[in-house]
Image (tube, rainbow, N blue to C red; front, side):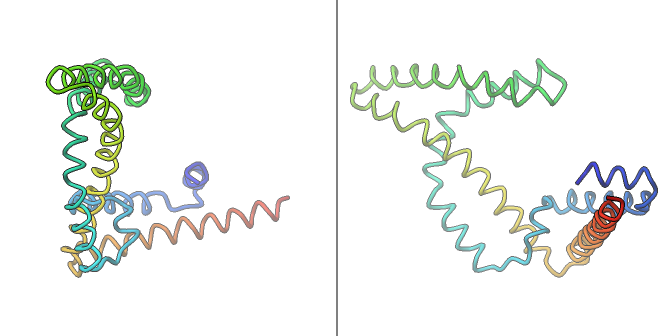
Length: 192
């Protein structure tokens, strides 16, 4: 889709400057409200649903904290080291994956050894088996929380000029791109 839109901009089929200004204004509005596109796309939100999600987040908080505490050191070490080593963002995910692939199991063994030294082997085995699951839960939970926070912010801004402007801009941008893509599709069929 992006390639088609870029081709349309280059060929002059899509009004580039106007669309570019609308997209820039849309992203500026997202930044000001501190939300992402999916929050505007999936609106409207209601208070009751967000409160139920908040209760779910509160129930999951102990699991998140356990997973975060046991993974924070290696997680942040991987991120910070990768950002210092590679300025190009394209390498970050690959390098962080490789670092995590080796460092997390090593950390699990060291931490389990400490638990064994302090308690006994059964606690260490239980720790070793459960800590990876809680680490994954912490990662998923943080994403849930960020989505909930964005939805909450958008709900608070509901009815404001800024929120209404974002909704309107998104609809305008998407309708222009969809109509252009439909016209492009018809032109391709006619040429075939």
